[in-house]
Image (cartoon, rainbow, N blue to C red; front, side, top):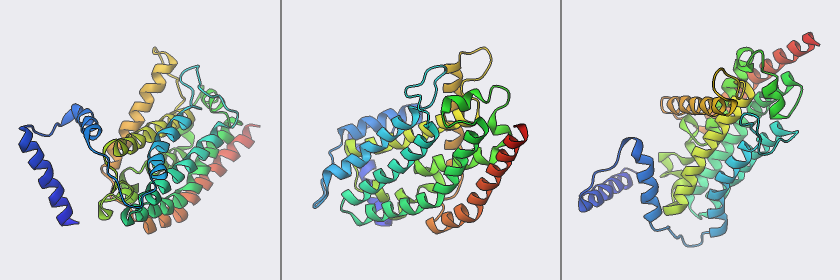
Length: 292
């Protein structure tokens, strides 16, 4: 692993020196990296199942669009489904399939082990995620995301169900392969599910991870932070602003937390996350019963 990292660093320095350019940093770095990956040749592996491999990368972006489709942007919603909360949970399972296709289709040991790690991680956070989603639905008496936003006109749900909000934000990092939940693409596996990706294929997966983080943040805003509620600005502007703030907070938090091994994550998810989610749901149910 050290030899591979040193070789990659040497190659990057050599190419930069040959062109007389320095690596771009700051706000222009994402655009520079995207342009670099679009120019890079796509890697071809012997025995790889290209439709599955490349389809898995594209599925991440599709999943993000499907997830954000049920989130109201002000008074407008792309798909105002009556089972919007269930839809969000179902799209999360679609991300499982995408990660598995990335690992299986590459015909690479590192990618396959990364996919197995992701599935183990997903099994650890799925039940806490499900009960964290159920809590605002029980409080609003509806599975429609728009109804949940409307039910927060007097008080945002994050105020009296903070545990569900924290668990959901942790799960957003998990299904986006960010921060302490990125063992599926960890450096100890030479990148895991990202190990064999290059060029446009790698760009699609990286963009999909960012898109999933943004979509999860938008769902968190709708379910716990009142959606577009706020003074002065229009509702759609508040929705976007809150989403950007939640997304920025998750990125900062992800960069400061240590990486969790899949076995440790399973222990935390089942012995801490699940009881906390159930306790929060019980409190919400008792409050709803008391009001009725």
